[in-house]
Picture 1 (cartoon, rainbow, N blue to C red):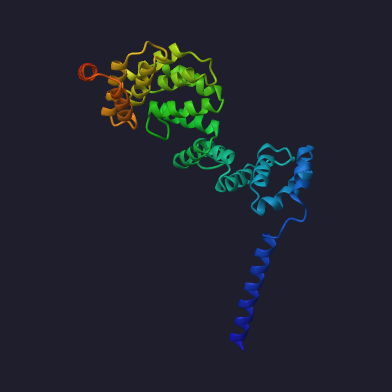
Picture 2 (cartoon, rainbow, N blue to C red):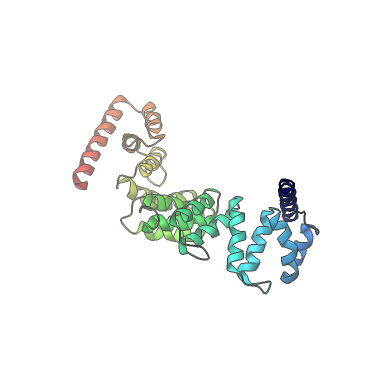
Length: 292
């Protein structure tokens, strides 16, 4: 009899658990459009309970809306814990804005314990997915060596990507770094001027900025400046110098540099190639001597 009682009790527990799970995943009674309309009209108090069932059902837009309502208090309730909870759920589903916001929170310990590894993970994911703000933040981390090893070239790349997305802060940060001894950012700023992206096109300025980093031994800049000399963009055309810079970049195993060097070689005489190779050796020897 006792065993039968145990079996019945266990069965009842399973049934109750199933009912509970069914309640949690129950489809929202009101369509999401109703919640969105209330939200759009500024009726946040009305919108909140309408949004919540959709958020619980996995609607990432609803989760972001709910996070905003709790974090800003628009619905009359400020609850950072609940807001961060929903923001985190949206981030887990790959929402780019949520990834960026959660990355910032982990970095600064806002509503969560500070976790630099998670901050970088979230911000990097958002940056790769095209979030300009996350690219700025990743650039900042690399520029100052916070949560990552200091790397001016990496900082420049992230600021450059943000600038390409229309974020003017990316341009200003590149400009600021280009005035220092940091190697890499000047070249990325030069690319913006070369292509007229978010700044007025200026081939001469672009050439000077890229050349600065090429002369500092930056392989990507050497690759880019090779093209400038090869086609006469921002400077007079000089095929031997173009070959030299491509050769130097290739010596640092920069992708595509050897191919570019070989392209120049096809339109050069053997004498020109020999001269360019001599120029490469002399440049490298001088660079090594002054770098020690």
